[in-house]
Amino acid sequence: MKKLFAFILSLSMIFALAACGAEPVPAQSTEAPDVQTGTVSSSALEKIKSAGKLVVGTEAQYAPYEFKDLDANFAGCDIFLAEKIAEKLGVELEIVDMAFDGIIPAAQAGQVDLGIAAFTNTPERAEVIDFSDIYEVSLQYLVVAAENVEKYSTKEALSGLKIGSQKGTIQSNLVVSAFPDSELFELEKYPALALEVQNGNIAGLVVDAAVGDSLVANSNGALAVSAYEFTKEEASFGKSVVIQKGNEDLVAVVNEVIAQVLADGSYQKAYDDAVAHAASLGL
Figure 1 (cartoon, one colour):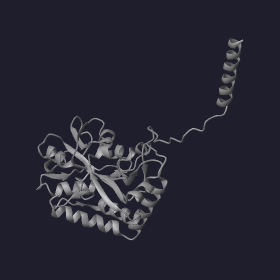
Figure 2 (cartoon, one colour):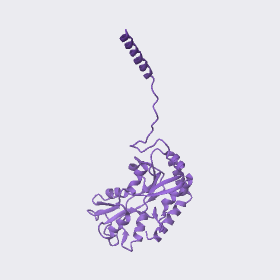
Figure 3 (cartoon, rainbow, N blue to C red):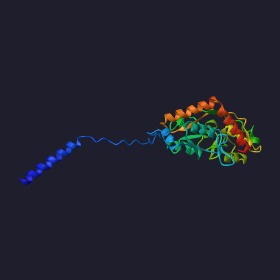
Figure 4 (cartoon, rainbow, N blue to C red):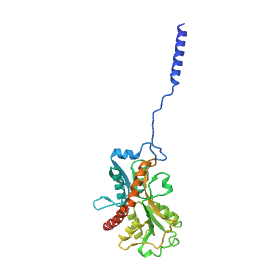
């Protein structure tokens, strides 16, 4: 009888536990970043305002867009744009100088709030990052040694030769598409590429017009813009700010600032001032 009673008691406990288990336990919310898209559940704009600072990634060797003055202060028309965005948000600005090809991954990961470094707005990049409206459109130059201005004026003349561009830039893609019979040569910085051209190690380099003008002006006559001209279909690049996906509110603020500085002419003035400033520094 004792054994029978114990057995019945055991069955009663099992049924009781089963009945308790029938009610689902609410799951805790564990929203996390989407690893593939880089989106986040919370707003980057909220984080910026909470932290009281805007962190912007750039590559400060691309005058007149971004560079450093003699006191190691950041300068350039892109820095002006970053300052205006921080001002609009009512927060401090922190600039992080980093390798160009590391800026988009840093923005994707939320390590920087914005990337402002003369980024060309392309469909391929837009798959992994959000773009602001375009704030500047730049022509592209093929810069060569001064004595080769006419010699390297056609694709045929450059066949089999090395053409340089900065690693991770749209210019690398342009070299490949516009000069399919030439060899792409990449380095981290444009000043180093300019030296490669001057030393005869590569035939030329492809770069934004403003930066190309600066490289030529500070080469003591060693460099010049080639007679080769890219077509609009090949190269007419619009520049935008890069922002982690899923932050439409931050994109809206950036676009508002861009619209304002274009309408009032302050970005153009900042661009012109940056050109003159960079020239005075020999950049």
